Structure formats: structure tokens, C-alpha cells
Length: 98
Length: 140
Image 1 (cartoon, helix red, strand yellow):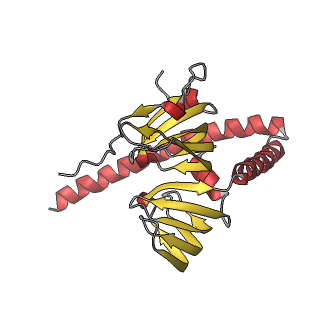
Image 2 (cartoon, each protein chain N blue to C red):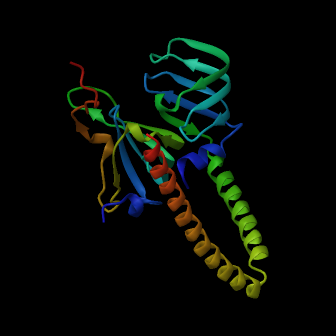
């Protein structure tokens, strides 16, 4: 059933409230959705219509506080992703200023 | 591996904390609790725009203000090691307690009797409190 248990010790991608994307092995998670990711990398994709280069930052062992996690998904490694040439619209963060 | 357990075993190690406002704090983790409140020592605080750097000898961080933490890579191995040691210790203790199987079943029986007695005791207390209540009602 819908549970994070099946993601444990697998490669996951996590999107956070400040619109960042992290990828790595999910080492631990608790009831508050605090997350531990080992060999974590932050992927910064190119934004459509800009000359920004794709960036990949090594973050090592990373612990995300539950409140900042938007979603967690297992990585399907059978699907190749061309990160260098991938472009997209910038993700908005989850804050909604009035 | 629970995140807070890992954090506990990262004590006295250098960590990086980013707060919700974008500030980052680099320092040695001196203590943490189950709300992820932290105390750091020998801290370098970086402003959200990475322009101002401040050196602070000691700082307390409220857990709810944290966005994420970067821990040293070896923390994971260290925590696993500690976990193993704890497990072994627990097993040893369990073996010592369960060493006498006959005695064990005797304990179980006795505990059941205790439970029954406990029930009686509770019932009696229930009666006596009823008595007090009715007594009080009579007074007023």
C-alpha cells in the first residue's frame, strides 16, 4: 500500500518546498517525514530561455527536515535522462505571497 | 536508520545547517533533542545572500527553523556501528534474563495472579469512591 517503506534503501528523488531537486539513496525516514539521503546530489536543470548551464552539486550525507519535503519518488533507472540538455520552466516554491 | 538517531550519532562532528530563511550555520554539533533543536559550537554563520560571514562561539537553533542538514559521510557508518553495539548489549541482557526457563514460566503465572489481584483492588477502590460520593451527597 501507499507507504514510504518500499522506497527505503532505493534511489529516490525528492522535491523540496524551496523548489530544489535532490537525488540519492534513501537511508532513513521517520513519521515526521524527516529524510536521510546518502550520496546526495542536487540537480539544477537549465531553465527554458536562459543560457544557464546544467549543474550537479555533490551534497554527501544529507538530512532534510520533514516540513520542507514536497514529494519523494523512486528513480526508475531504466529511463535515461539527458540532464545536460533538459530544459524546463522554473519550479515555483510553495510559498504563496499575497 | 531514523533521521534523529543519525543526528544523535553526529554529535561533536562538524555539520552544516540551513535554516528556513536561507542562512547557513557551520559548526560542531554539541547537542540535539527529539524536536531537532540543536546547539552548535564554533559556528560560522552565512547570510542568505552569502555576503556576510559571522563567527559565533555558540548558538542554539530551534528545530522547526531548520530546512536541512549536511552531515559528514562517515556519520552513517558510525551510527550503524553504534547500533550494532547497542543490539549486542541488548541481546546479552535478554539472555541473562531468560537464562532460567522454569523460573520464567513461574513468573508468568505469578504475574497473572497479580493482575487478578490488581483487578480486585481496583474494584474495591471503585466501591469505596462510590461510598465517598454518596456520603458527600448526604452531607450537602
